[in-house]
Image (cartoon, rainbow, N blue to C red):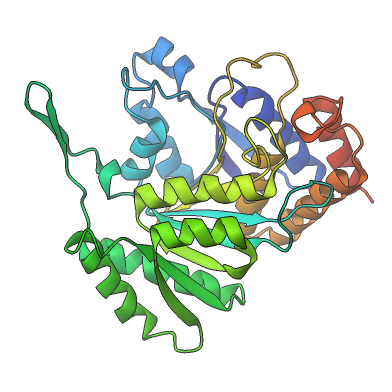
Length: 338
């Protein structure tokens, strides 16, 4: 089985190599096809996301990706946005659940954030009207809105989920979110056996802070999904910088291609020190194995991660331990063998 591996930059090479070790320990034979993205690609090709990388994913259909640095307010455009649009990876899926051994104010969190990946403000349609005035276009189309809501309902149906919550701001953005909400209601009619609710995005944020266990599957447009998925990760992670971003997996699905990635940043301040937490990308690799028909191995990896967290040996510093990338990876591999 051939799968594209994008190591990324910063801590990307360290955490993706940890994931490759765990996949091998789960007795899944993968021929990793390396492709470049991020700072190394920009230095080598003059382009942070070379067309060759996109073509490689189109050829092999599936990729595991490490984090890539995105300059803030300057430099090149987000690699993740370009990757999702270039491959029409219209659905971002982030499962968020309470984890053993991680102390948080919340219990019994088990939700999935489904985010439309290709439109909204992240469509990148912006220009300077006159000096000092910039206009950004928030793009919402009926086909994309219907597609992502149907994806959320199908995901709920296949995973035995009880409810889909559509998050919007239709009271303010009456045309764009009004169209999205109309599409959501129409699609929901096709799934009478799954509860459907619609909530303003600000209400969702408030209710998540009060009791996130009330949510199941949430679906929303691009910018809202970016914010809510990180907020949700913070609900299940340890206190401190990064919160749960080092623990939560992520996937981007299209009709033909899929890219699985950790949701955290490239953390250049700790790059090369061997102390990065690899769990997010390891769990993303488990989701990838489910996608390619090796759900048995993916489930074993997920269970091994849970055991490693529960036992608490060799954990990285962000998880309250004194271990490093290698010790945590070794613990996960050890529990795979049990």
